[in-house]
Length: 360
Image (cartoon, rainbow, N blue to C red; front, side, top):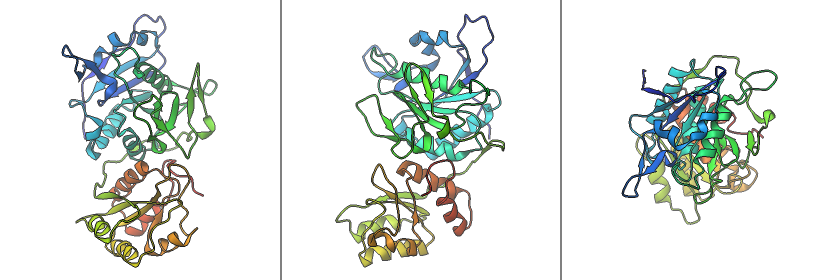
C-alpha cells in the first residue's frame, strides 16, 4: 500500500552543526492547525505556514518535515480507515525519521492513539500524538507548548546510552506524556485535557522534561510490523439502571456483529436478571466476543468478586482488567481483524498486548 504524500521541509535554519535527529510531523487536522479568516471564522491553514505562526521552531536543532493529509479530518469524523492510513504513512517513512508527531483533534485522539499502538507492533521509535484546545493563531494558545514539547519528546535520546527514550505511541498534552492506549479525554474547557487514571505518566514537562523511564516499554528486539486490518463490526453497550431487554437485544443482535465492549458497574458488575444473562449467552453462542470494561475511570474489572459478576465468565464474557473504553474498542477491532479462531481471539483479548492493561 503506497501512501506517498508531498513532504514540506521546515527545518529551522541558522545552526552551524548538522542536526542530530529528524522528526516527521503528520498533520491530520484539529484545532492546532486552525486560523481565522477575514470573516473571523476558524478554517484549516496550510500547515507549512507553521513557521510564521511559531518562530520558536527556528531554535530547534533537528531536521523537521511536515506531511499534511490531502483531506483534513475533523477528529469527530475519524474512521478505522484513517488509522490504517496513518500506520501506513509511518511505515513508509519509518527508516527516514527518528520520531513522529501526529497532530490530531482532541475529541478522538485517545481512540486514534490506542488504535495506532496495536497496529504498530514492535515499534522502536516515538509516535507522539498532540493537539491543542486553542488554535495556534490565538494569543493564549496551548498549541505552541504542546507541539514544541512533543517534538522534544519525539527526538529524545537517553543521555548516556543514546537509545530511543520513548519507543511508544503516546499522547502529550499540557504537561503530561501518557501511553497512548491509557489516555482518556477528561476536559473540554481547560488545557489539561487528558489523563491516565490507571497508569503513571511516561513523562512530565516542567522547566525540563522529566522522563519516568521505568514506566516506558522497552525497545523491541524484533523489527516493526505494521498490521493492515481492523474489524469495525463492534459496539459499545453501556449499562444503566432500567436498561431493557429490547435495548440490549437491539444492540447485541445487530447483523454481522463480532464484538462488544460491555461497560459495567464498579469492578465489572452487571444485572443478574435472567433475560440479561440470556442475551449475553445468546450473543456469545453466535460468536460475539464480549469484553467487560468498568464505567469507573479508576480501578479495574474483577469478575467474580461479587455475585453480580460471577456468572459473566461462565457466559464467555472476558474481563477487561483496567483497560479504558477507548483502548478496549480499538483492541476489539484489532484482534478481530487478525482473523483468528474464537478461542485464540479470546486469549488475545485477555492478554496485555501493548501495555494497555495491568494484569492483576
